[in-house]
Length: 105
Image 1 (tube, one colour):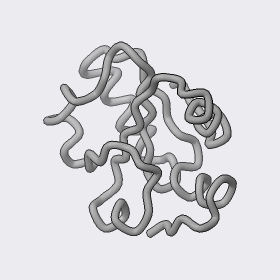
Image 2 (image 1 turned 90 degrees about the horizontal axis):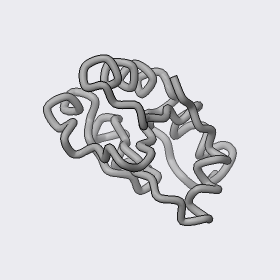
Image 3 (image 1 turned 180 degrees about the vertical axis):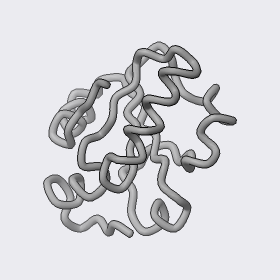
Image 4 (image 1 turned 120 degrees about the vertical axis):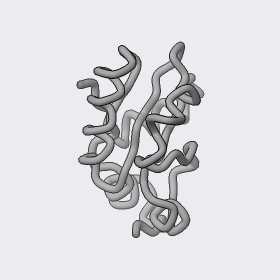
């Protein structure tokens, strides 16, 4: 499994590196605070997998990195996707290390 930490993601954003951020948390978690990614809750990710880019890196993100890691593995196995990255530490790491003003539910 490929992983990216919050500092690498921040660098990608600052460098305008092409990527897609997918937030798989529940609605209430996303509404409390988010990183500006596309919101596709975990329960909808497989029916909406066609919304994931296949030609640029796709970063999957949840609260702490556990759910997104599981979803990443399942997407790789079911659809053969090889451009997926798990955001280690998820929204909690982003709030702690990058943007302390962001709320995490």
